[in-house]
Length: 333
Image (cartoon, rainbow, N blue to C red; front, top):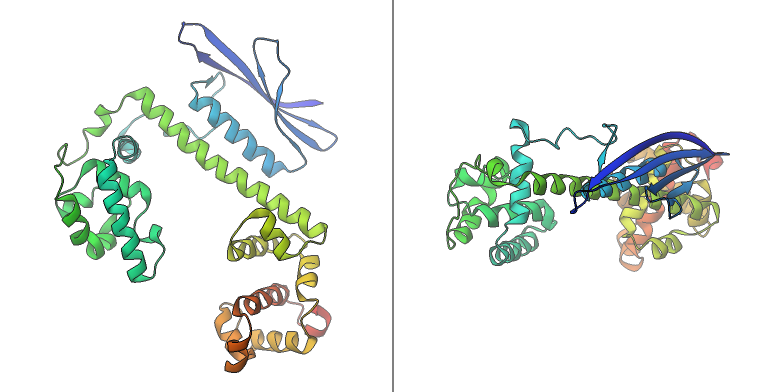
């Protein structure tokens, strides 16, 4: 096994000792390995990853390092992660405000704001996170703005949200006492440096965990396609919403992976005449939006009596073929 990269990380214990460990990236016959070994020499190396995917290996490495650094380990050789935010300067005020908001959110006010967001999302028929993210609500409940100008100091809130929601949000926050004054520059001095640094690495850990999850889902989909699984089987295994699964499949197509076996399987029961009509509709009305294609192919009676979600699945599968630009629907189908 060839060692491609190695670094030592050190952690100061409560007793004042220094504990160290080594992380390494190795390669053997096309298989990547990410290993962690403690300095006690008594335990075998812990395998974080073993596989052929470079992307998944890198995501695993970054996530593992973020976990270790969040636990207080410091790399002897810097630069394994993007650590530009790990020291506080003028540019880190936003992250300090976010950190403080998460740590000192008023639980009761947060729940009140979350209930408002839920009702507003239902009223406007929007996703709740589009109205406001949990992080925004944590910050609002921690700093308790009393004026529209103070709401604008909440990172990510912005003029658009202020115009749309400030009056309603302030009606809720004004029922509570503001614990500290605006502007919020005092936050940088208030936060303990170690607490802030641990919070930063927790954000990195979450970020790389999401990246790792995406890589693992990608591997599962590709393996499933090679093994001849259907969309229904993949959805059951991955527990993903149907739309998200299809978006992942489309992304794989754009990345150059062969998903033709999945398309074949999904369209095997679709009459050729129906496939030809869909292809012609894509050529006629364009492939950017599927609703016009749906209306072009199926009449009102068909749409009443057939599952529309299933029809959209068919459109998306044929659109993948269409976008490959064969120019010949007979050959593509």
